[in-house]
Structures are given as structure tokens and as C-alpha cells.
Image (cartoon, rainbow, N blue to C red; front, side):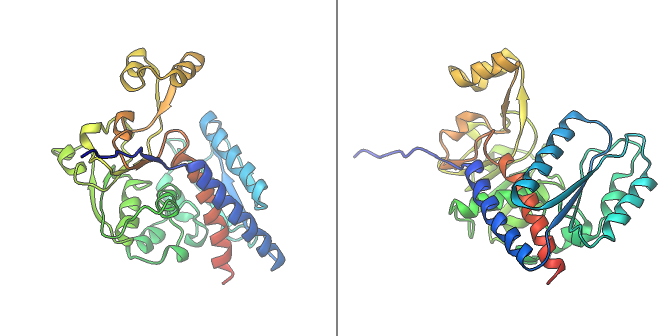
Amino acid sequence: MSSIVSSPIVLDGIAIAGQIKSELAAEVEAARERGYVPGLAVILVGEVPASQIYVRSKVKTCGELGIYSEMHTPPASVTTEELLALVASLNARENIDGILIQLPLPAHVDTSRLLEAVMPEKDVDGFHPVNAGRLLSGSPMEEILAPCTPAGIMEILRRSKIQIRGKRAVVIGRSNIVGKPAAAMLINASATVTVCHSQTADLGAITREADIVVAAIGKAGFVSAEMVKPGATIIDVGMNPISTEAELQKFFPGNATRRAAFEKRGSTLMGDVDPAAFAISGAYTPVPGGVGALTIAMLMANTVKAARLRRA
């Protein structure tokens, strides 16, 4: 008796982000008809090339959706007190619904103090302790501002009709930005969740029990095929450049597309999951084109949500 092995489903983050942006554009237009325009202020300190690229992309997306945006670019020498004064001025403005502080900040700036100075109602990154507490307490997602990458993960699962309720989920990584909030969101969606990290003993034994694996540990190819249960859903949050021939041969042997990218740029991007694990999965997010594509879309969603909740 022969069995049919189905190919894994590729969870297309770019397509899902497109759906979300289309919905948001309609909501922004409806808000305009009600007399207001959602507004986002971005604070970009210094001249970090990667941060500049991210911020330009965020501002561009605001324009595409009809969201008002403005960028504040204090020099790298700016003090914590000066930044606190800027945040206070933005907190007080009625036409600014969301405040985003692009990280990382210079070492001399007190990042925690600055992030906590943003009004929770305008914290579109979802990093404020008040918003973290609301997430942990199980408040409905429609009523809180949650971190963008974990919120994007949940949108991918929901829109792809991946069952969460009653499933076993393993989150690899315990950061405040991804791992912890992703675990909280999965718990709130009635999954049974285990959080693992670099110090977890016999990690593979735990991940092999998971129906859903969220890899957010920041190490290229860390999750091997031997660590994944056949048919599991893999959410790969990693964004790691690989720049050696040995790594290319290890993770992408015979892959002409990756070879071409590698030879053109001197590197290619991969996630925290070995592509060999994708082959035995039931569904997975590719890198690039998976979770990363959702982050800006969810920032826009938080900005529109913040505007709506502030006027409710």
C-alpha cells in the first residue's frame, strides 16, 4: 500500500502583507471620511545605514496607505534628556497616533527610559511595559498594541488557516521583541507552549514534539531536519547573512539561485532553520519572503489601530 507524501506549503509573507496593506488602505480612507488621518512619527538617531533603510521603507509604506508620517533625525550625539523632550512633544500632539524609536540607539542613550517615555497609547512597537502587561494578561488583540514581528507571525498562521488551538508550539528564543511576546500570543490562542533558548538541554527532544516551531534565535541554520517533527509548521524569524563558501555548500548545495545571489553580493540571506527541515515540514515561512515581510505591515496596522482606539 503506497502513501502519498504531500509537498510542504510555502507561507507567503509577501502576499499576506499585501492583503493586510490593502485592508489598511481602506480603513485609512474610512478614517479620513470620519475626519482624521492616522499619524506616525519616527525617531531615527544618527546615521546607521541599516536603520536608515528600514525607516525609509516605513515612511514609504505610510505614503502608500495614506498614513501621515514625519521623521525626526537627531544626531548621534543627542542626549537622553533631549530625546525625552522630543518624545514628550510627540506625546502631546493630537495628530500623532504612533511613535516609533528606531533601534539600536547610541550606547550613551538610556534606551529603556526612552521607550517607557512613549505613551502606551502611542507605542506602536508594543514595547512599553503597560502594553506587554496587557498582552500577558490576555487582553484581546483588537484592543492592544503588540510587538510587530510576533503579531505578524500570528497573522501568517491565522490567514493560512494553520490550527493553533490545542496544538503544541515551541518558541526558540526568549527576546522581549520576538520570543516572549510570540509565546504569549500563542498561549492566548490556546496553544500549549514551550519556550526554549541557547541554554535548553536536549533541545531537539523538545522541538520534535512540536506541531508549530517558531525559530527566533539568530543563528543561521540552527534548527536542523532532525529537530523537526514531519508535518510540523515552521515559522522562521531569522535573518542571517551567510558569506562563506562552506556555509553555502552546507545549506544550499546545488541551488543555482542562491549561488547566483552569493556570487553577485558576496553573501545570501537565510533564516534560523536549515532548508533541509523545510522539506519535511507541513508548512513553512521562507527567508526572505516570510515573517520579515509582515513586520512593516503590522507597524502600519498598529498605527491605524492606535488612531482608532485613541478616538473610540
